[in-house]
Length: 125
Image (cartoon, rainbow, N blue to C red; front, side):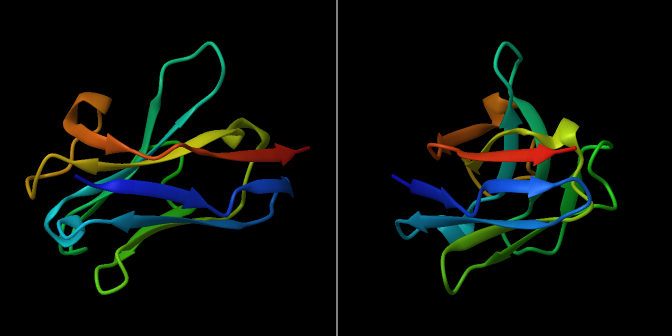
């Protein structure tokens, strides 16, 4: 079992930055690939970024590539998402997710077994 708690969301102006954190409980964090997704009301949850269990491989949605950076600290059981040059279209609830295992992290929700409660990110124009 893995419990995930996101933090770091908030209101920021366009062009600004935020850093999201996801604290994980349980002893299997370091053996799981992890991901970030986001969702706006009325739309499906959207893949943002993913990282392998070791942190050696990262994957990004085209819409955030070059602006967002995913990272992890396995010693601290924490996942991060650094978001720069934020745009109003980035406004959403952001969720961290733990994959079923160590395999290549997927880009769809079905690849992930555990989810946090989400943190709101609002980017004003």
